Image (cartoon, rainbow, N blue to C red; front, side, top):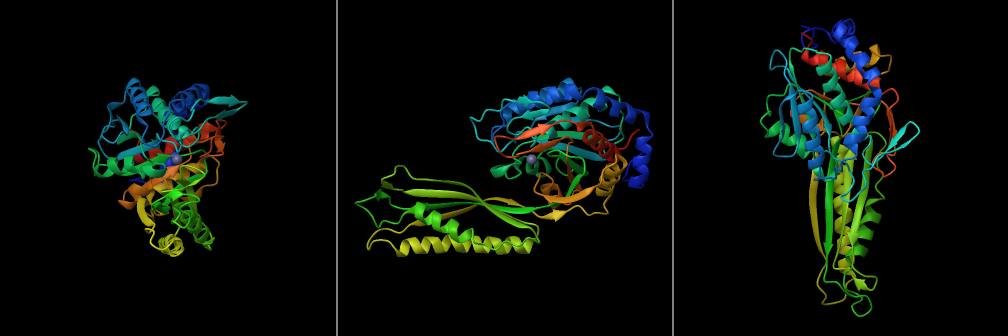
Length: 407
Ligand SMILES: [Zn+2]
């Protein structure tokens, strides 16, 4: 058996590279490049807004069944699962990509082509991960690759935004595979050099200011929730975020008001706070809360005598744990070796992905690029270029086989 869990990752990769089934699978990725892209287009054309991933999950489950995966299901949370059983149940490796996108219901998910580029919301994040999932399962099945451990392929729900990792959280803490998973690999976005082994922590808030509302002329002086939101943003946006450890913040959505000449009864915003270091995240979080409270107090202090106060509702709607899979763990070393053997310079990276959750549970986890290149992620102009996608798939396959072992 060839597995990085029992021998050195470097040796494992050398042995895998000299295996004939691995060469056949590599050729599969090269000769089927067009078909893999066609499949990529098909799955990305199915809308998958936050909390609206069901149609895509069902499509993926049908795909898994047609490829001969077993124990195929869409679980209670909406994740799509399918197993390639090895000669043993362990080690059990989860290979995942996320089904959801950041785009709201009603967005057109139609894929168009511009020369070598594919264009559609979510085409790279995480369309190329889903395409990699299908291509890997297909290569393993078509080339008759037999493994010692088992591979659980999972299309997860709720990776983006308010999903708050609900899919992977269910999978690893409540689902029927919980506590059976030995290692976790996620494909998210393009590229062949990135190895995300550090989980970037984040906190997300929804802020709501609620007041009595009124007529813009007749009731002037009633506390105005939109003014308060504006003031809160202005205070908050002055935060001197350090470059190192990298710390970022974003007011991603604001809403409120009904008419130009009505004092709004309500205004809200959604805010994302991130930092590479837990202490910095706490500092940013405290500054943000203070900015919101001060904006509230300011607006209330200005109000007409006798008018009711503006009320604040502050909800923590997302919290992602920080942590890392150590540089010297078998999984990270294996990913480094496979990247090098394919001629690329490995780049360890920190990001917020599905791997945050297993990392917080002590399960070795990394997120890899799925090959190709992309741009304008999380915008309606998102694009993906599948050239050299095969290199990402080859790397993915080597990491998978390095963990579960070839028979
Ligand atoms: Zn993603």
